Structure formats: C-alpha cells, structure tokens
Length: 178
Image 1: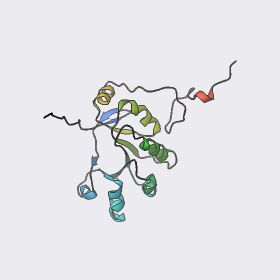
Image 2: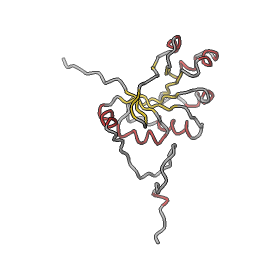
Image 3: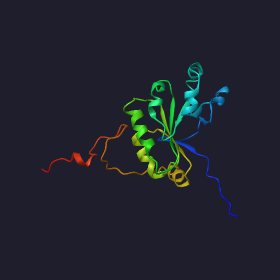
Image 4: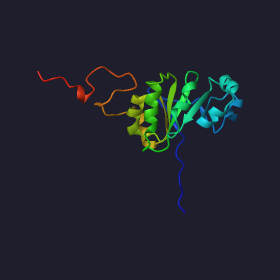
C-alpha cells in the first residue's frame, strides 16, 4: 500500500509577495452567518436573495468555473469585491480569457484571483491578463516565488490587459530599417 501526501494548502501571492488570506472558500452561503469573507460558487451566489446579497456585498466573492458564463456575473460586478477564476488543470486556459474580459470589456476594478492549479510558468501570463491575487500550492511555484523569481517571456505578440512598461513589445510593430 503506497502512501500519498496531501498537497500543501495554497498560499496567497500578489506582486508584493506572500500575504495572509482573508477570504475562505465555502460551498454555500451559510458561512455568511459569521463575519467571514467568503468565496462561493456562482450558483450559490445567484441563489442568494437580493437583500442578503446586498447585506454581504463587501464580504462575498464568487468562484467562476471555466465552463460557467461570465455574463451571469456582469450585473453584479460593480458590487463584487472579488472574482475568483478557477484553474482545475494547468491545461485549461479559459480563465485567462475571462480575466481579460473582466478587466477590458467590463472594466472590473475589484480583485481577480486565480484559484486551483497555478504553476510557475503560468504566473507571468496571469499577471498580464489581469489577475492580481494567486492561490499557489505547487511546491516549485512556492519556492521560486519565495526567491522572487517570476520569470517570463519578455517579447510579446499581443497587448496586455494590465499596464506595461514602455518600449518595443510587439514583433509586428518593428521599426523600418534605416
């Protein structure tokens, strides 16, 4: 019989480094009974009575799975402090698109959080597409982030959903030869 070791609990990382997590994941809205700041699945959020949703507006966030439509959240974005986008597997990139849409098309200024399988090589793209908080459990990612090593590809073909440094960035905007 082989022993399996549990994955470490996710740590919260931002561009400023690791910090304590002041949000908890909950399967339903019963956790609102306390003063917790909770992240609930989309269906639990939508099932809330409007008065309960309004009463908890500063302490309720929504977890959106890759297959769920972002449009269901659009009417609530001006009151939601946090939208968590799920990465159930490293190969599922639909949440990148949702982050870009939140920031660019919908003008969302709250926290966009990556939840799930966050690997070190995904972090630069997550930051460029609009994520500002990451739940990191992968040991390699935790180690490199602790060392301040967030490498990435510096030459890009597409614009970013976030502010970038000035300078030549796109290969298709090359300057003509002198």
